[in-house]
Image (cartoon, rainbow, N blue to C red; front, side, top):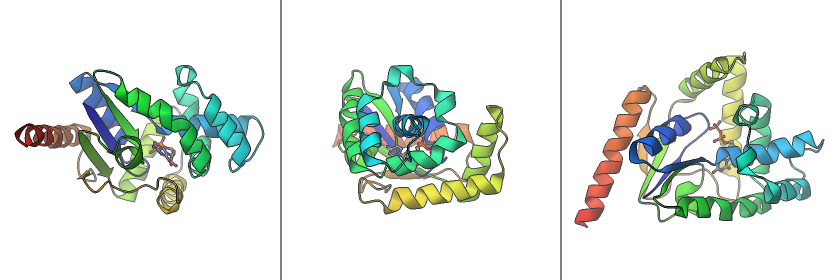
Length: 212
Ligand code: CDP
C-alpha cells in the first residue's frame, strides 16, 4: 500500500505520516528532508540556493542514510529548501530515489508537495492536509521550541506564506492537490483527531477499492 500525503508548510503532514506509517506497518519518507539536504549542502559550500549547477550536483550526491534531521529542520534551511525545490534538475535528480522508496515492500507513506501528483500518482490513498496559516505558524513555533530553538511567530508565519507562494507558483511540480486527493483540514483538530480522521479516510478508500 502506498499513501501520499501532501500539503503546505507545517500543516502537520510529517507527524501524521509518521503515525499512519507506524499504524499500518509501512515505511515512511519525509521528502522535505531531501530538498532541505540539497539546500544545506549548497549553503554550507558557500553558494546561493538558486545556483542551478551546484544544487543539481548536490541533489545527485545526497545520502539520506546520513541525514541529521535536527540540522535539516533548522529555520535557516527552510527558505533555501523551497528555492532549490523550484529547480527542475533538482527535482529530477531526486525522483528515482523517492519512487524506489515507495516501491519497497510492504509499501510506504510519503509526505511532501508532489507525492500524489508526480512521485506516486497511482498511490492507493492520497491526502491533502491543510490548516489555517496562523495555526500552522503556532504549531511550527511549538515544534521549534521543543527542539530548543526560539522563534518569533510573525517571522515564522511570514516564512510559511512565502514558501507556500513559491511552492504553489513554480512550474515544476507545484504544490496542489491531486484531483483524487482527500482534503483534510486540521485547523480545529489536534494530532489524535487528525490521525483518526486520516485513518477513517484511508479505511473508506480501501473498502471502496475492494468493492470496486
Ligand atoms: O516541514 P515543512 O512543511 O515546513 O517543509 P518540508 O516538508 O520539510 O519541505 C521543505 C521545502 O521542500 C518545501 O517548502 C518545498 O519547497 C520543498 N518540497 C518540495 O518541493 N516537494 C516535496 N515533495 C517536499 C518538499
